[in-house]
Amino acid sequence: MRTDYDSIAERYKRAKLQPWRNCIETFTLLDLIGNLSGQAVVDVACGEAFYTRRLRAQGAARVLGLDLSERMVELAREQEAEQPLGIDYRVGDGKNLSLPSEFDLAVAAYFLNYAADQHELEAMCAGISACLRPGGAS
Image (cartoon, rainbow, N blue to C red; front, side):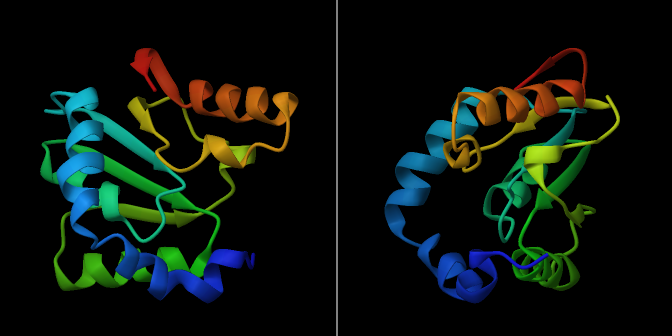
């Protein structure tokens, strides 16, 4: 499936290298998430894997990155091939998420803002919730 992000994937990846992303955004997100040791994590709308790889480096036992953009997933897989962390990447639509209920945490740093209306937002949240084990968090 082609998305607007396919054509800008490389520029988007470079934009993630801005210093404030690491000093403010990444620090804040990882601080909110806390200890990931032994957890299974899904990163919805993972893009080129900027946060996906950090989640694994923070101790998550298993990480799945999912994005609608085939090119973004290609970039993520290229990084995985260069520096393997054992992350699985899939092309898929987070708006129609159909994953098994086997994750302890769902991260969606740049996803929910794409909801067109309240009903779509509710559907996105329901899909995320459905992929979590009992007691899982998003």
